[in-house]
Length: 220
Image (cartoon, rainbow, N blue to C red; front, top):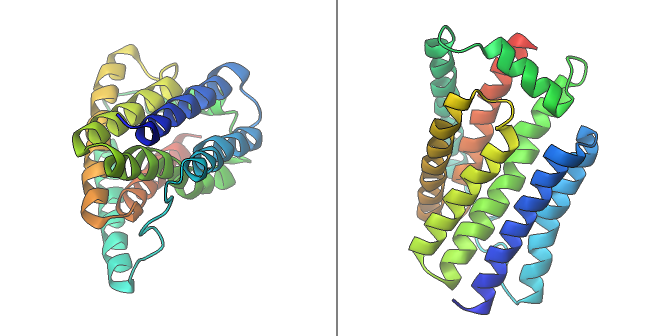
């Protein structure tokens, strides 16, 4: 493994550990957590890539109107699928208790929910897609191999999220959540590999989060 790919792997791992510590141990106000996450998931990887001479963005800012509309339709479909999943399972799981636990963990109340929900769906999803897809997949794939990038990015995506929400989820949901997130990460990787940029996974991620925020809003 060359030094550039190793630098990206180490950066992603350190950034995830740092944010996990902030989220689960330090637990500052949401605005502070968001600022720290922006620094670790965006600024830090950009700095490392600049130091090692890695082109950071590539095709990131190239998107036609036709492609945008297709992504918008894809995102709308994802939203409906997640909401349908909620409607099917709402009698099987206690979503009210889950939302109450998440609200307590994230220190989010009804009065602050809307700005937090907008940030999570748009800003937070971009930060995560930049780290896990742009850096840990597309850039790592350029510098190592597709197999390495697929495995690393999807596993980091899954482990990171389980570490974030593990205390809020019932134990029986943790393993399925880990597997589901890893599979989701692989799908995101595949979508971005086909497009050559992170817009595909970002739209899917953002609209899935919009759906989750809809469910959260119902119970908050």
